[in-house]
Length: 458
Ligand SMILES: Cc1cc2nc3c(=O)[nH]c(=O)nc-3n(C[C@H](O)[C@H](O)[C@H](O)COP(=O)(O)OP(=O)(O)OC[C@H]3O[C@@H](n4cnc5c(N)ncnc54)[C@H](O)[C@@H]3O)c2cc1C
Ligand SMILES: *[C@@H]1O[C@H](CO)[C@@H](O)[C@H](O)[C@H]1NC(C)=O
Ligand SMILES: *[C@@H]1O[C@H](CO)[C@@H](O)[C@H](O)[C@H]1NC(C)=O
Ligand SMILES: *[C@@H]1O[C@H](CO)[C@@H](O)[C@H](O)[C@H]1NC(C)=O
Ligand SMILES: *[C@@H]1O[C@H](CO)[C@@H](O)[C@H](O)[C@H]1NC(C)=O
Image (cartoon, rainbow, N blue to C red):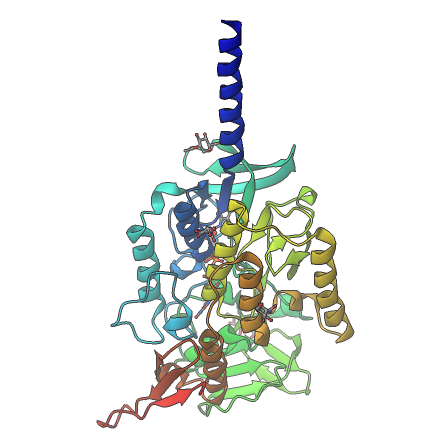
């Protein structure tokens, strides 16, 4: 009898021993934000069968792609997140802005309106039934590292109640184009006209027949100044960009160097010239605001940077936290997709990260080279011409699918034609041929013969 029992007992423990080893603890993941980063994460997390939740401050998916006519704060007193404006069309061809496994409809042009891109994002959420993993109107107020897990505290904006979530991994997908970076020019307080940031620019109507100054020449600076110049009496574009733009600007369009100081009715520029002005739009970029993080995250946060991150995403000091989409000068949507896939592979345990020392050494080398060049620390987010190498790097490390080089080639060619002519670069239609090649053509609106395809990448 005794003998029999012990055999059974022995058998049971070995079964349990094996079952514990073959079925590792499945981590719980908290995703913050239901923009492209949150949507993409949800897609891969669902596929991997992990336990996860997406906390979204608004009642919508799509993040910055949902146009909201309001500026300032919403019905809950929370700052409006979106920076979308009414006339926006994408500045990258659609093939570089697609979500994995879900091509944009065939009748979509290469450069679509925000509205159609937003529709596309909503249909993605619907098709893969992602909304059931999302808690809307849940604004994350704090994320703390305590006792080997992340304590995520969000506020249910509808009830005012606080909700605590305990998570093994945190994916931060809150975007970094929502908190204005304001310049601080002398005499601003004297200026009699209106001053807004591009975050609050919605439509050109308020600028009809006025003398408008746009400051900054990033993509928004050019887009918004060209847009306003159609209706304004005068458009003064102040910037210090050295990149030549071949665009033939209209007669009411004047370029100026940096603002030196404002007066009651206008501004002096660093070349000593003066312009009378009614309105000012600052297209001076955004801050990398992560107000819900504290020192327990191990991250250093400046107004336009956050570090140290491995591959622009994994928090080196707390590698169960991943920041998605905190990159500049890249096909952001494609990058976020590749990052989300990497992050889910990490949470699944499909690969292990390099040692902290190795990740730190690699990050430090990049930080040092930025300093050596005398560049600002915000460059730490810039992928730029390293985009293809980046995709190769994260794919090599995680064993995930590699984004083909044609994606970066398309961005490269798009960027060039943007600088050649801001008024026409969106008229090209792009066609993907294979992983290395694409073609594009510019249809002359006055011609009936189809345009000639130019092949790139051969
Ligand atoms: C005007 C504009 C034009 C752009 N044009 C292009 C383009 O043509 N092509 C391109 O590839 N990229 C473009 N971008 C870049 C754009 O940022 C990315 O395409 C992409 O939308 C980033 O997605 P995201 O999910 O990281 O962030 P977001 O879209 O900003 O989404 C973040 C989400 O997080 C939520 N959130 C924020 N804080 C909290 C919190 N504390 N708690 C809970 N939820 C929170 C927000 O409500 C939002 O839904 C553009 C950006 C802007 C602003
Ligand atoms: C997911 O995690 C939450 C919080 O730990 C838990 O309450 C829930 O039961 C889990 N769900 C599944 C399907 O394991
Ligand atoms: C300031 O604005 C008011 C109202 O728009 C206008 O009447 C006034 O002339 C302006 N003053 C200057 C110095 O431009
Ligand atoms: C993890 O690895 C398995 C087995 O190779 C694979 O099927 C799965 O897609 C991987 N998951 C991710 C998120 O890469
Ligand atoms: C990725 O792996 C391949 C094959 O091992 C290698 O040739 C390539 O150099 C690696 N890429 C990077 C960016 O490390």
